[in-house]
Every structure is written in C-alpha cells, then in structure tokens.
Length: 198
View 1 (tube, rainbow, N blue to C red):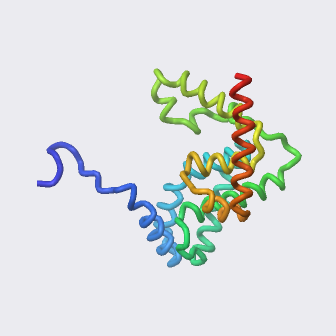
View 2 (view 1 turned 180 degrees about the vertical axis):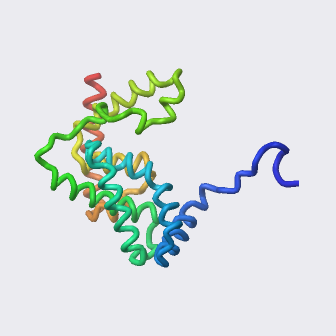
C-alpha cells in the first residue's frame, strides 16, 4: 500500500530539482514551449526577489525577468552542465540587472519598503497574525541593505538566500573569489554598524 489513506504522496523530492531543471533546459533546446513555461514559473519568485534586491526598483523587475528568460530561451544550448541551472540563470539575471541599472541610472533607487508587500510576501500577508512582525523584520533588513552597493546586496542574497558558495558566486558574477569575499566582508561590516545603530 502506497502512502497513508487520505494523504497524497509527495512524489517531488527537492534533491531532484537540479535534475528536473536540467531536463527542462534540454527540452527548451528542442524548442519545447511547455518546458519553457514550467521553468519560467519555477524561477519567477526567485528571480523577482534577486532582481529586487539588486535594483531596488519595482518598475524594472518584470522587464529584467523577461530579458533573462528570453536569453534562457535563445541560449539554452549554451548551458554546459558545469554548474546548476539555477546558478546559470541567476548569473544571467545578475548581468541583466546591472545592465538595466546602468541604463536607468538617472532614477533614484527605490526602497523595498515602497514595493507592494502582497507581491513580495504573499504568504505573510495571508497570515494576519504574523504580518506585523514579518513586515517589521523585513523593513529593518531592507533599511540595512539600502546601505550596501548592488554588488554587496547580490553577494548577501546569493549566499544566504540561494545557498551558493563563494566559488559559485565568483563564477556567476564573473570576478575572482577574493573579490566576493571582500564584498561580503564590507557588507557584513556595514550591516553590523546598522545593527549597533538600531
């Protein structure tokens, strides 16, 4: 007998995700639009958060996501399997976000406090009891991250929210590993100063 009565089996294992992502990329190489749509939905939330952290601009997030996924569609055959699909896609996102920031430099960066909380944190909004505490924590974090450069925010995001190692981040950001370590060192120092002030 498979599973408990009345409880569906959980057939998707999180450790299978990299393999599933690679399979989707292989299908996209064959112009499989359904595979592309599945990959888009799998990565949308991660890309939204990552790009929001780097750009601090709500008006450009969806534009950058679309640019990233266009590159994935057009260049899927260039994915060589030497890193995880997620690392490859986040690398594209990092470059596209930086390029978009350069093109829109006259505008001031927007604090994530000004973004729609419902769009960024739908689960928190749904749980009325925890919204205030979640919002307060996120506001503090965003205020602290506002003091970091885009590169430092990217290193923080990739390390703590995506679980990448410095070597992977260095490859993704196309810089030496020591540069990643230096950015993390300076980011931590700035965040520690903010913590003391608070």
